[in-house]
Length: 239
Image (tube, rainbow, N blue to C red):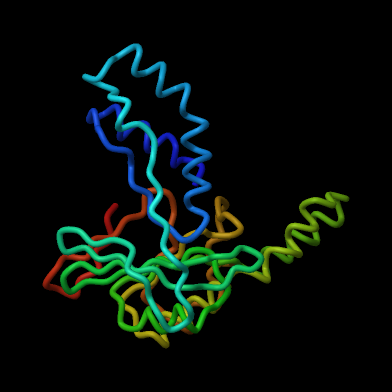
Protein backbone atom coordinates (compact mmCIF):
# COMPACT_ATOMS: atom_id res chain seq x y z
CA UNK A 1 0.00 0.00 0.00
CA UNK A 2 2.98 2.33 0.09
CA UNK A 3 2.11 3.86 -3.29
CA UNK A 4 -1.49 4.66 -2.38
CA UNK A 5 -0.84 8.23 -1.24
CA UNK A 6 1.06 9.14 -4.39
CA UNK A 7 -1.58 7.54 -6.60
CA UNK A 8 -4.30 9.61 -4.91
CA UNK A 9 -2.23 12.79 -5.36
CA UNK A 10 -1.52 12.17 -9.06
CA UNK A 11 -5.20 11.40 -9.69
CA UNK A 12 -6.21 14.61 -7.93
CA UNK A 13 -3.91 17.06 -9.70
CA UNK A 14 -3.94 15.44 -13.13
CA UNK A 15 -7.70 15.96 -13.60
CA UNK A 16 -8.66 18.61 -11.00
CA UNK A 17 -10.88 16.12 -9.16
CA UNK A 18 -13.32 17.70 -6.73
CA UNK A 19 -13.96 14.52 -4.71
CA UNK A 20 -11.41 12.39 -2.82
CA UNK A 21 -10.32 9.01 -4.15
CA UNK A 22 -12.71 6.32 -2.82
CA UNK A 23 -10.88 3.44 -1.13
CA UNK A 24 -12.82 0.27 -0.35
CA UNK A 25 -11.67 -2.41 2.06
CA UNK A 26 -12.33 -4.38 5.24
CA UNK A 27 -12.36 -2.91 8.73
CA UNK A 28 -9.15 -0.99 9.33
CA UNK A 29 -9.07 0.69 5.92
CA UNK A 30 -10.36 3.89 7.50
CA UNK A 31 -7.29 4.05 9.74
CA UNK A 32 -4.97 3.50 6.77
CA UNK A 33 -6.71 6.22 4.75
CA UNK A 34 -6.66 8.63 7.68
CA UNK A 35 -2.92 8.14 8.03
CA UNK A 36 -2.25 8.84 4.36
CA UNK A 37 -4.49 11.90 4.42
CA UNK A 38 -2.63 13.27 7.43
CA UNK A 39 0.75 12.60 5.79
CA UNK A 40 -0.23 14.42 2.59
CA UNK A 41 -2.15 17.28 4.23
CA UNK A 42 0.65 19.84 4.03
CA UNK A 43 1.46 18.82 0.46
CA UNK A 44 -2.18 19.37 -0.52
CA UNK A 45 -2.18 22.83 1.05
CA UNK A 46 0.95 23.86 -0.83
CA UNK A 47 -0.34 22.55 -4.15
CA UNK A 48 -3.61 24.42 -3.73
CA UNK A 49 -1.86 27.66 -2.78
CA UNK A 50 0.42 27.31 -5.80
CA UNK A 51 -2.02 26.15 -8.48
CA UNK A 52 -5.47 27.08 -7.14
CA UNK A 53 -8.72 25.32 -8.03
CA UNK A 54 -7.80 25.01 -11.70
CA UNK A 55 -5.36 22.23 -10.86
CA UNK A 56 -5.78 21.37 -7.18
CA UNK A 57 -9.25 22.04 -5.70
CA UNK A 58 -8.99 21.18 -2.02
CA UNK A 59 -12.29 19.31 -2.06
CA UNK A 60 -10.70 16.57 -4.19
CA UNK A 61 -7.53 16.02 -2.23
CA UNK A 62 -6.80 12.76 -0.43
CA UNK A 63 -8.95 9.66 -0.03
CA UNK A 64 -12.27 8.61 1.46
CA UNK A 65 -12.58 5.21 3.12
CA UNK A 66 -15.49 2.85 2.56
CA UNK A 67 -15.41 0.03 5.11
CA UNK A 68 -17.02 -3.36 4.52
CA UNK A 69 -17.41 -6.20 7.04
CA UNK A 70 -15.20 -9.21 6.51
CA UNK A 71 -17.52 -12.05 5.46
CA UNK A 72 -17.44 -15.46 7.13
CA UNK A 73 -16.26 -18.48 5.16
CA UNK A 74 -18.69 -19.41 2.41
CA UNK A 75 -20.02 -15.89 1.91
CA UNK A 76 -18.98 -12.92 -0.21
CA UNK A 77 -19.61 -9.24 0.51
CA UNK A 78 -20.27 -6.82 -2.38
CA UNK A 79 -17.93 -3.84 -2.08
CA UNK A 80 -18.28 -2.06 -5.43
CA UNK A 81 -20.51 -1.99 -8.49
CA UNK A 82 -20.36 0.38 -11.44
CA UNK A 83 -20.94 0.13 -15.21
CA UNK A 84 -21.26 -3.64 -15.13
CA UNK A 85 -18.21 -4.25 -12.95
CA UNK A 86 -18.91 -5.95 -9.62
CA UNK A 87 -16.31 -6.52 -6.90
CA UNK A 88 -16.90 -8.84 -3.98
CA UNK A 89 -14.72 -9.53 -0.94
CA UNK A 90 -14.05 -12.97 0.55
CA UNK A 91 -12.20 -14.10 3.64
CA UNK A 92 -8.74 -15.67 3.52
CA UNK A 93 -6.26 -16.73 6.22
CA UNK A 94 -3.13 -14.68 6.97
CA UNK A 95 -2.80 -14.72 10.77
CA UNK A 96 -1.78 -12.69 12.68
CA UNK A 97 -3.11 -10.26 10.03
CA UNK A 98 -6.84 -9.88 10.58
CA UNK A 99 -8.91 -9.16 8.59
CA UNK A 100 -7.36 -10.64 5.44
CA UNK A 101 -9.38 -10.75 2.23
CA UNK A 102 -9.37 -11.66 -1.45
CA UNK A 103 -11.29 -9.84 -4.17
CA UNK A 104 -13.40 -11.34 -6.97
CA UNK A 105 -13.93 -9.09 -10.02
CA UNK A 106 -16.84 -9.84 -12.35
CA UNK A 107 -17.55 -8.03 -15.60
CA UNK A 108 -20.22 -9.35 -17.95
CA UNK A 109 -19.24 -13.00 -18.46
CA UNK A 110 -15.61 -12.77 -17.23
CA UNK A 111 -14.19 -13.20 -13.73
CA UNK A 112 -10.81 -12.70 -12.06
CA UNK A 113 -9.89 -13.38 -8.46
CA UNK A 114 -6.95 -11.82 -6.58
CA UNK A 115 -5.90 -13.79 -3.52
CA UNK A 116 -4.17 -11.24 -1.35
CA UNK A 117 -1.77 -12.74 1.19
CA UNK A 118 -3.01 -16.09 2.47
CA UNK A 119 -2.20 -19.68 3.28
CA UNK A 120 -3.84 -22.26 1.02
CA UNK A 121 -7.51 -21.48 1.48
CA UNK A 122 -10.47 -23.77 0.86
CA UNK A 123 -12.70 -20.71 1.01
CA UNK A 124 -10.73 -19.01 -1.75
CA UNK A 125 -10.84 -22.19 -3.82
CA UNK A 126 -14.63 -22.25 -3.49
CA UNK A 127 -14.94 -18.77 -4.99
CA UNK A 128 -12.22 -19.45 -7.57
CA UNK A 129 -14.34 -22.16 -9.16
CA UNK A 130 -14.31 -21.61 -12.92
CA UNK A 131 -12.78 -18.11 -12.87
CA UNK A 132 -10.98 -17.01 -16.00
CA UNK A 133 -7.91 -15.71 -14.17
CA UNK A 134 -6.66 -16.54 -10.69
CA UNK A 135 -4.02 -14.09 -9.46
CA UNK A 136 -2.41 -15.86 -6.52
CA UNK A 137 0.52 -15.17 -4.24
CA UNK A 138 3.32 -17.69 -3.86
CA UNK A 139 6.26 -18.45 -1.58
CA UNK A 140 8.86 -21.08 -2.48
CA UNK A 141 9.57 -23.01 0.71
CA UNK A 142 12.81 -24.65 -0.58
CA UNK A 143 14.28 -21.27 -1.61
CA UNK A 144 13.29 -19.63 1.67
CA UNK A 145 14.87 -22.56 3.54
CA UNK A 146 18.09 -21.97 1.60
CA UNK A 147 17.90 -18.28 2.55
CA UNK A 148 17.59 -19.35 6.18
CA UNK A 149 20.64 -21.59 5.99
CA UNK A 150 22.70 -18.84 4.37
CA UNK A 151 21.54 -16.26 6.91
CA UNK A 152 22.32 -18.60 9.79
CA UNK A 153 25.83 -19.28 8.47
CA UNK A 154 26.40 -15.54 8.01
CA UNK A 155 25.14 -14.74 11.51
CA UNK A 156 22.28 -12.60 10.17
CA UNK A 157 19.79 -13.15 12.97
CA UNK A 158 17.10 -10.89 11.50
CA UNK A 159 16.95 -12.62 8.10
CA UNK A 160 17.26 -16.00 9.78
CA UNK A 161 14.20 -15.25 11.93
CA UNK A 162 12.17 -13.78 9.05
CA UNK A 163 12.86 -16.79 6.84
CA UNK A 164 11.59 -19.07 9.62
CA UNK A 165 8.45 -16.99 10.26
CA UNK A 166 7.09 -16.25 6.80
CA UNK A 167 6.33 -19.76 5.41
CA UNK A 168 3.48 -20.33 7.85
CA UNK A 169 1.22 -17.62 6.41
CA UNK A 170 1.78 -17.89 2.68
CA UNK A 171 0.90 -20.36 -0.09
CA UNK A 172 3.52 -22.38 -1.97
CA UNK A 173 3.51 -22.30 -5.79
CA UNK A 174 2.45 -25.96 -5.90
CA UNK A 175 -0.42 -25.29 -3.49
CA UNK A 176 -1.61 -22.39 -5.64
CA UNK A 177 -1.41 -24.68 -8.67
CA UNK A 178 -3.53 -27.24 -6.81
CA UNK A 179 -6.18 -24.59 -6.20
CA UNK A 180 -6.12 -23.62 -9.88
CA UNK A 181 -6.43 -27.25 -10.94
CA UNK A 182 -9.16 -28.21 -8.49
CA UNK A 183 -11.16 -25.02 -9.15
CA UNK A 184 -10.77 -25.46 -12.93
CA UNK A 185 -9.57 -21.90 -13.51
CA UNK A 186 -8.65 -20.63 -16.95
CA UNK A 187 -5.18 -19.30 -16.11
CA UNK A 188 -3.03 -18.88 -13.01
CA UNK A 189 -0.92 -15.75 -12.58
CA UNK A 190 1.60 -15.83 -9.74
CA UNK A 191 2.27 -12.56 -7.95
CA UNK A 192 3.81 -11.53 -4.61
CA UNK A 193 6.67 -13.83 -5.63
CA UNK A 194 8.78 -14.75 -2.58
CA UNK A 195 11.71 -14.78 -2.79
CA UNK A 196 12.30 -12.64 -5.86
CA UNK A 197 13.76 -14.44 -8.90
CA UNK A 198 16.20 -11.98 -10.54
CA UNK A 199 18.92 -14.48 -11.43
CA UNK A 200 18.97 -17.11 -14.21
CA UNK A 201 17.71 -20.44 -12.94
CA UNK A 202 15.77 -19.06 -10.00
CA UNK A 203 12.47 -18.99 -11.89
CA UNK A 204 12.74 -22.71 -12.60
CA UNK A 205 13.60 -23.40 -8.97
CA UNK A 206 10.68 -21.26 -7.76
CA UNK A 207 8.27 -23.08 -10.09
CA UNK A 208 9.57 -26.55 -9.27
CA UNK A 209 6.66 -29.01 -9.22
CA UNK A 210 4.06 -26.61 -10.65
CA UNK A 211 4.03 -28.11 -14.16
CA UNK A 212 3.07 -31.51 -12.76
CA UNK A 213 -0.05 -29.97 -11.21
CA UNK A 214 -1.23 -27.18 -13.53
CA UNK A 215 0.21 -26.02 -16.85
CA UNK A 216 -1.73 -22.82 -17.65
CA UNK A 217 0.26 -20.37 -15.56
CA UNK A 218 2.44 -17.27 -15.76
CA UNK A 219 5.08 -16.16 -13.28
CA UNK A 220 4.32 -12.48 -12.92
CA UNK A 221 6.81 -9.65 -12.90
CA UNK A 222 6.49 -5.86 -12.96
CA UNK A 223 4.43 -4.92 -16.02
CA UNK A 224 2.73 -8.30 -16.49
CA UNK A 225 -0.82 -7.82 -17.72
CA UNK A 226 -3.77 -9.82 -19.01
CA UNK A 227 -6.91 -9.00 -20.97
CA UNK A 228 -10.18 -10.92 -20.60
CA UNK A 229 -12.36 -9.87 -23.56
CA UNK A 230 -16.08 -10.06 -22.81
CA UNK A 231 -17.99 -12.62 -24.82
CA UNK A 232 -15.04 -15.00 -25.17
CA UNK A 233 -12.97 -17.44 -23.15
CA UNK A 234 -9.63 -15.89 -24.18
CA UNK A 235 -7.00 -15.01 -21.58
CA UNK A 236 -4.62 -12.75 -23.44
CA UNK A 237 -1.19 -11.86 -22.10
CA UNK A 238 -0.24 -8.21 -22.62
CA UNK A 239 3.46 -7.53 -23.18
